Length: 421
Ligand SMILES: Cc1ncc(COP(=O)(O)O)c(C=O)c1O
Image (cartoon, rainbow, N blue to C red; front, side, top):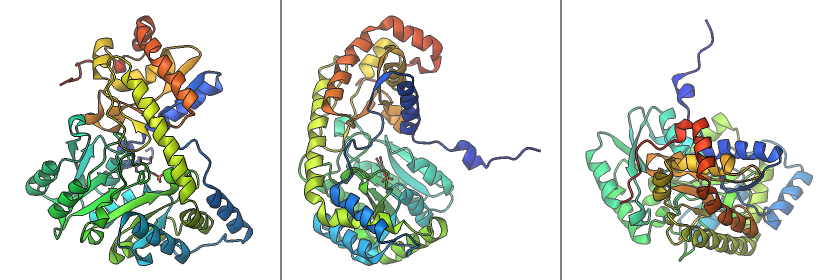
């Protein structure tokens, strides 16, 4: 008898951005010029003190195990940072270091979910939420975000989930939001806090884009009264300090929950490399000005890309509010051409031209409610963004090439037109 993978392993879905990244890299290796707008990575160098701090930590032989929740310097610096920047009442004991933000989705689910628990997930959503919920045998409950509501979380949807679900246990909240760029307002956060306060309901507040807010400043749910007690917030160095490959982030939670998450680190990772934590500590202490300058460059890119996309017939994106993604509605184009939105993305990468392509993602890679949209990140120099913008109308006009590509990939033919109301 051959060895059998578990039901979970067989059903595991992954982040499509990495799959499209693989296609883009192999096309590039074969000589194609590809503008890569598929992955949410920064094109900038890690900030200066992070790099210097990492080198100094290596020279200082900080190359051994360290406490599972993190080294004291890092936990103190992270607590001071969220107090100073987001008004979150955290001390060092409220912080747990980890390799990025993503791992805390799993630890949050392990901390709060038993099999059958209901978890509210706004759709479209960051793709790894669902596998992490399912890993616990819990039950994602999807609620759509709407472009007409600026992709803000619907308060009435949360109320309904809490009132009607048979076992409501948790909510995944992501503001600023990937992929849509939506932001929950201070009023939204206050209302969400009022709804969950004192109930046995935990919130995962995913905040990787906390420095990419283009109007006003970032607000965290954890600054609302009582919310530190029943939320886990996740922050990362991947975006703000261009440190995605270092793998560093941290969670903020009540002391008891932070202790529990520390045990999860102990039983999986042992600890987060001290070299990396020291690099991050240096970034938190010294690199705010460099970070903010880089963030302004991102904002300019998002504006450039949004304005350019909105000039293309059938594309409509909201004015940029946050993140380095643009999420245009392309349903009219898909309906006219008879292609799904992810099919459109792949056609522009693979099929529209022999020598040039754009890598992006269909909104359905982030859940059914994303169908009819594209997600483009701004992770390329401005000149390359302009080349991509010039190429899209050319790609859309090549109906014969699209038909030939769809003949090869019929799974991307649009069977039912998308709603355009
Ligand atoms: C919403 C969201 N959560 C989590 C992550 C994971 O970030 P990290 O690289 O820190 O693990 C990302 C990265 O793109 C993200 O967009």
